[in-house]
Length: 351
Image (tube, rainbow, N blue to C red; front, side, top):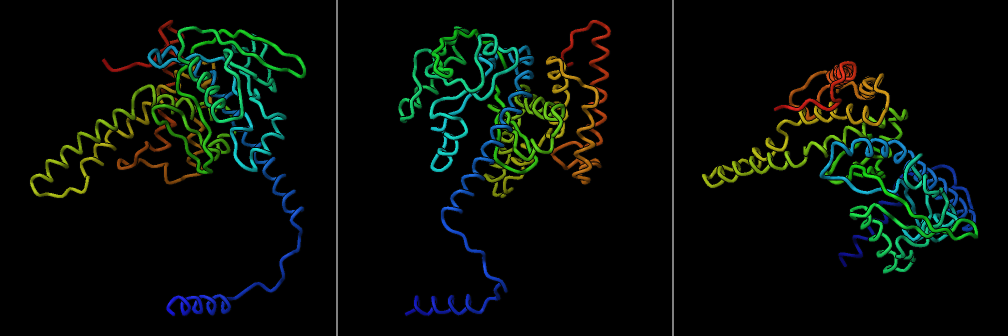
């Protein structure tokens, strides 16, 4: 009886709500399906274009910065691919249409990279890597990707690819090169954001749209690489644990700190870590042969979008955009001075 009364109340509520004055347009299911398919195709093409741009900008930085990450180097052929089997449901049909095959298709090749030198090209269909064949069933799929991951950490720099180009089957032997083992990956979020998680460099679609100039995107990528290489996440975790010990000690004395010391520890040196990531980023970009002039203007653009970040705030997690602009300008002067005087162009670290 209670359920019936509840349904009656909901029905009366809905019928009492104000509605539109015009009727919705009529369309048939076929039209709706066709339009949905078209929009999925447009969305996936844009997604793949974002990934290609991300690889184009990040790869030279990861390669050049390998000299700074001796303990975190991996092998790379300088190419990326995708397969419709990586997608689910309707998106798999869309991917198959765009990629032109249900196989593993090369979608990006680094200019003058190992794969390009060996003759690999975009749209090549990779049949096997080191004789491990690609397959759409779950077991084959996992084995193929596991082999790709294995050769990145293998002692042998050689990777053997069997591929199909039109009707021709080709065998390529690619001598991999060393890069920093922190791949740049694309996140679906529309927020203007980027972050390092100790394993990767994550760039959102929102940041890709904001950083329209490749120099701006390179600065963001190099900055997040700096967080990873300088061990900032590990240091923050250590500081958090030290603060948590104080929270536990206070709790043992009957004082509930509600995690205050742990939170304070996690945020300790936050602005300094950000400033350090900005600093080393310029050295990574210089090592990649990227132009540094005008780099600092990124923070003027960010300030125009977020005026609240212009002034100094000691409680904020990041330095003010005005501070970051000046610090980057000074770092560029430092790099120029080292080049002019024949000094090693490496970040100046504390003794």
